[in-house]
Length: 256
Ligand SMILES: [Zn+2]
Ligand SMILES: [Zn+2]
Image (cartoon, rainbow, N blue to C red; front, side, top):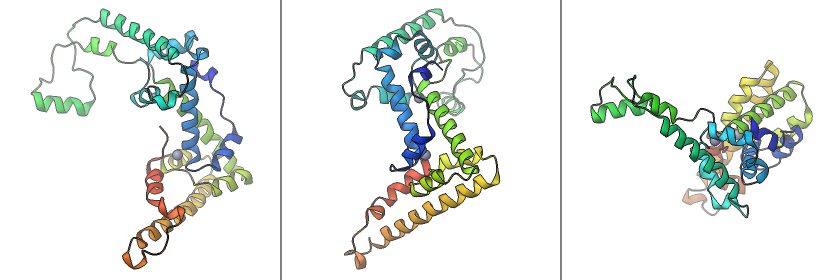
C-alpha cells in the first residue's frame, strides 16, 4: 500500500492516549488515520509518489465517503488543493483511456448490485439476459480499493491485534485506560471479540463493556425521568444530557 510509507505507523501508546479522549478509542484512531491519509494527498510528498498515483488510478480515486471528506473546505484548511488537482487529473486521464477502449460486446447481465438490478428489472421490464456492454461497464469500475479505507482498516486491525494481545496478558495499563474510557463501540467490540485468541480476552471485554453499558443505561434512565414535568426542576448532568447521542454512537461507532 503506497500510502503507507507516508503515514506514521500505529503505536500502542497512542491507543492508551486515545482512551483518555471522548468516544470509542478505536473510532478516534480510525478518524486520525483518515485525517493523516487525507493530509498527505494535499502534500507534495504524497502526490509526486508514483506508487501513490498508481494506487489511486487503480481505485479511480476514493470511495464516496472519503471523496466527500476530501472536498470539504473545513478539512482542507489552509492546505493547497494543488496535490488533489494533480492526482485527480491523472485519474481523469485513466478513465478517458478506459472509456476509449470500451466496445459493445455480447455478454451476460450487467454486473450491477443485485438489489439495483432487481429494481431495474421490475421498473423497466428489463430482459434478464441481453446483449450488452458488460465488459465496458466492468472496465470502468475501480480495480483497487479506496486507499484511505484500506489504510484505516489496516491500522484498526493492527490496533485490535495489539489490544487483544495486551488484554490476554492482563496488561494493567491498558485495562485501566479502557475501563476509564468511554468504551468500545459495538462494531469495534465485535471486531475485538473476533480477534480474541483466548477466553480471558472475551471475559475482559465483556466486563469492561458491561461497566460502560450500565453507566449508559443509568444516564438514559435519568434523562428520560427528568423529562417528566414532576422532575423538570432537576438539572441534567453532562453525562445524562448527551446519553441519547452516546447510545446511538455506541451502536454504530463514529469512524468514517
Ligand atoms: Zn469504535
Ligand atoms: Zn474510503
